[in-house]
Image 1 (cartoon, rainbow, N blue to C red):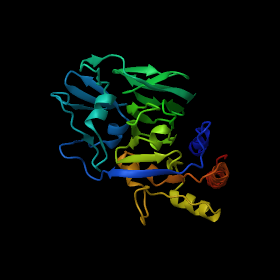
Image 2 (cartoon, one colour):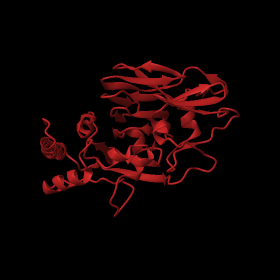
Image 3 (cartoon, rainbow, N blue to C red):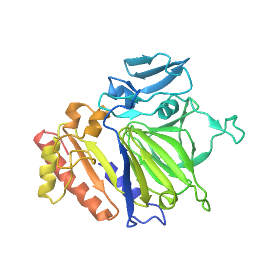
Length: 322
């Protein structure tokens, strides 16, 4: 439940939570892209480690491994998709495997990608994959264009970018820092950040006001305008069914959902979380909490208190301490 509180923690001076923001869904993926390689194990695809071995791509997680022979043969990389259509583009696969190149003005490869932000909050541990090497991140460290940042178990990571955008990664989140071009006096500011796995919260900076800011996920690409935009928080308490939690919260005047944000009038688990490889048992316990530009710290406090009451009663019935 610390995720909901992290949204207010991310506010920085000069960035009011009352500023109106807009989120535009540019595209939604319900089927694997043409030419994509379908990986049967969605959990391995979105949470596993990516490694290049010659022209082969190796996906691994614990005792599971998948080798895609000749994946890096040729210049173009095909997308990798789960059976439900959620996918990673070839560029994201390149980044996850540490196979990225940055062009200089003359067209030659550069070994010094641009610094686009720095770590401003770190609880626990976090890493960045940079040029194929995993680097431990510390408070104050720079992050570069092309980095794949990942928070560890029971850890949270906060990053402030050069345009003032602030991102928070919950535990076990993975995000690719594809692009960030910002000039206070420029007219072609843009950013693209790709969430591969986990949960993020953010307050958009200057690029979202006068530029092109996009957040990419395996199932949708979203354009951001304004400062404080809608933030979706998905979490689950194993054993506490979402239907039971929603009923308890509704009695307290608190409204949440168990479905995805990109659906209407549907009852059931989120197809987005399903496509990300979340287990069926955990899907039945997932809740979605939405915060918008008009949300206040009092709203967050009320929800935390209400959910604490619902969780306490659940643990009491299970014979455990709250």
